[in-house]
Length: 70
Image (tube, one colour):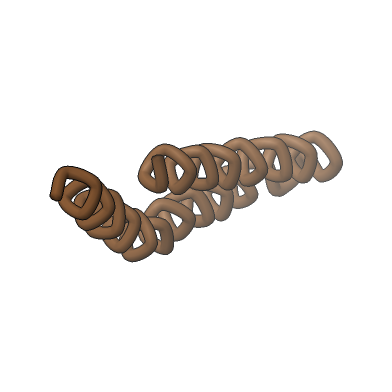
């Protein structure tokens, strides 16, 4: 359950980065290429920042499953 929530938040962050990047590229077309590169960097950072919480959620789910089996 916790893993699904963390994946949802990572996906939500990626959607937010995409929407903001698209809006910025639309608003300032002269820097469209640079803006999309920054958006790609933001997407990579979003995924990288989600790895730790995702790992902790996986451990918590595994421990909860073990506890419920006993």
